Length: 180
Image 1 (cartoon, one colour):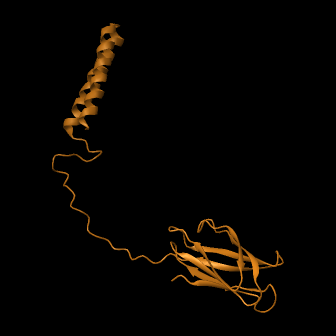
Image 2: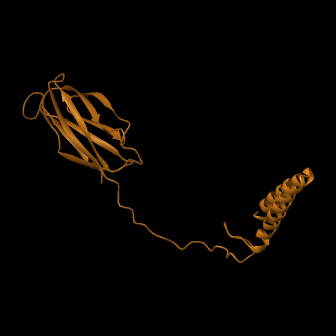
Image 3: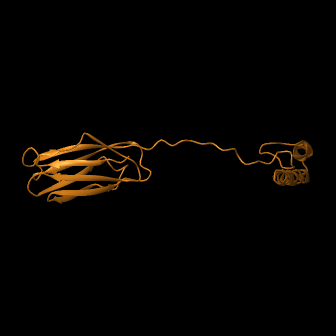
């Protein structure tokens, strides 16, 4: 689908530039800019304006004796959009812009059946699923720890505080390994 951007030089008068209004190119291809000179040999500057999402090319000085092809690689994953190529001749006295449109090809989406996934009732648990067997040890350790903290506050014996702390720590370990 890539077209050739054919730019005519010196056709109407000296330093005249005739560029096509729009050229379409696909990502991953080369934009071929063909310069056709109808007069004497000419030096020109080719600049890509706002082309950084589409190509690495920025500018080049080109000598055109009669016909010259110049390739500009378009990035493989370039988005759809437009940028301008500016052709400058006559030491900057004349310039012309050609619009280059990058068009991503339409991709036909095909969906296939997903592979067979194992059922959740094969002994494994889903994430976030709590069974009573996993919640019960945690609830018991929290209850006993609260009871021991209450005894420590009422009687002032420090041993109740230590036992409650160890019990809570063991409850965290049991909860950790029960979710694995």
